[in-house]
Length: 184
Image 1 (cartoon, one colour):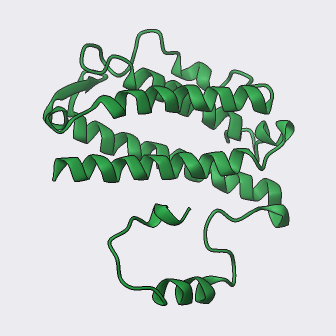
Image 2 (spheres, one colour; image 1 turned 120 degrees about the horizontal axis):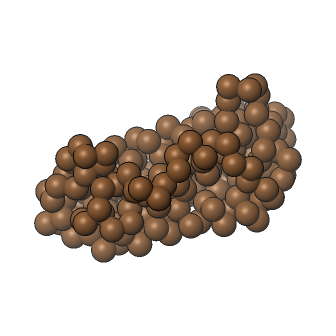
């Protein structure tokens, strides 16, 4: 059961990473730094925050608190990000840290207690917490990308008016045990 949980979780994290990447590649340097208003974050700022969170949470998780003393969370929301190359490098740095740690986890690690801001979580709880956190921010990223690109947006899922065609394709095959991300 726990091995299946880790496999499923890996697919989910990879799915959200892919959604973010498919959004980021559609945006120009200036679009990556666009905000709808002063109270909102740009796509680049969201990437700064996600990367900072991943680096803090997934570095040395069994021996240090997930909120590292070297992390400056407030700065993640104020630093300028620069061009697409810089934003993508920051994106990959965070995800590489996460997946490096995740790939080393085993079934027995899931019940081990780790800490985030002195609050104990099992590794499984921390993974669930972070999956929800990443999905939340990647949803923001996608939404802002759609606002920016408008009619030039390249859909990341079933395109508008394409549901019947998609469903017809799915129901024309035999039932099988697959993960929805296998079609991406």
